[in-house]
Image (tube, rainbow, N blue to C red; front, side, top):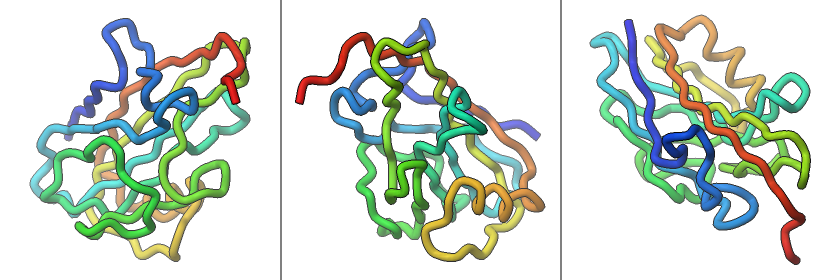
Length: 159
């Protein structure tokens, strides 16, 4: 079983587009994926920075129906979207997407967007964290795919 995940937020050299970071729009990037196995019930997406502790969550998205093959750019910070997709809490304790934002002049960080192909959509409490979602997904995951981009901040953002 395989699936592929794509985004235009990562350039051909593997660097993250600044539009989707704390330095500019800080809006979620578009994600697209290939057709999943026939028995797929739906999907979940987690975006994280593995270079911070045990991983810092930048986006927690779940209950993505099997009929959907992409998430558009600029998804608002709403718990439930009109199509039933739900968002959890990021590492800052806020709902929705939080773009890459490594400390200025620190080492380049990696940002991984991972899609989980699920045989069943688990029941979850409202606004789960990355850890809560991963625990609920674990018995239902059939396949995963990921895309990774790097980002580095050279100077402090002007206030």
